[in-house]
Image (cartoon, rainbow, N blue to C red; front, side):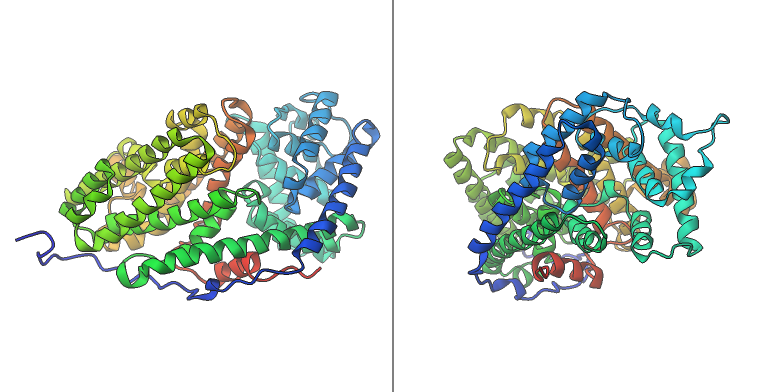
Length: 550
């Protein structure tokens, strides 16, 4: 009897359906965009002049840092990349790694490290008294406490003074928030937001959405900068609407809910992932749409390997991926054919793009990372088939790859409209520490919030089960705390590599870090990606549907 004819017992999960319906299958070009772009051009020149006017005057350097901070948090740094680099380089040249004096130390420290400049944490020794305790006077400066708190998250492994400063500043802010000691609602809101999620873990586009109304309430805000932020947000939102409309038409052609009903239908959420975590700047439209579709396809593959496919079927699909040819479709089980066709079609599109860019040889990198991804899933299927619980080392080696992040990064490098050198792909294939750390954040945060539901349906062992077996741990709550600490350690590693790693440019490191930030959005307290609730729905509408009122 053929594999297709066998009566097999399959896992049934009943994932919640797509919440969007055909909402994004309608798009209208906004006629007023050309006029807005002209106004944006004028405002950009005004802000550039403000940046450049402060460069050579050390008295103005603190105000310069405040301006740069506002630009970045308002989500329009892509307008001023050259000017910001020039400004922070000049500040670094003027003060070195520890010679900043006076107020604003925490802001200076955070902005320098964010930009890839190494500045010494020893700077904060001046915050301590002769007994090694943090000065009590710091508690009276709320803005200073907030800046210190945010700066400490740029810590690297072994920076004890920043660990201590985080504990101190967080305790102070928690006490203030808990005791309702603030009469200023703006500052109170800022403290609550910071405690909920520090700046390090916020995605730039979401921070812009949050920070624009906060900045507008500040008494001495820059009117030109605020207007530019609002106009820039709406312009980019209009581009996102067009992109999501285009990929929705592509998805609709395959009728995934009907033809692959066992899998999660999450195209919009995958576009969110691509937009926030991979291609944040406007110029990468082609890559953003390609990676969003790749994410959606990975979700179908994930659910096929994790839940629906039998072991024998998965062996056949894996062999077809290794052969990488549309001619393999006929040998696949019926329900797998569409997934394989979608992958081959998307791959052909990638290849055509690379031919046009004169870098078709980079196609091999994308194909190889996809094969590696599938092999990792096949290994997980083997463990599940044999009821084998791997060691922590085995689990990490396989499941960090099955996050799909290496494939997504390779695809994002290839799909850029500008040239990425082969050395960048080779760096990725070496599995550098920053990539490993980002994959670790993904795997650990995912397993913490999903393992209970997954084990109910005989899922492959998560990191929780692996640790329990290897180390005879008995309480899940203890392990949640342990792995949450490991997530924080991974962020320290990302911070270190973002500064120390000179093999790739800063935007590449930033992209790797942003993939970790997406996890803090989608998997911090529950699986928001699978179980889409009001919080994520409202966020998507704010990002892709509702314009900011000017």
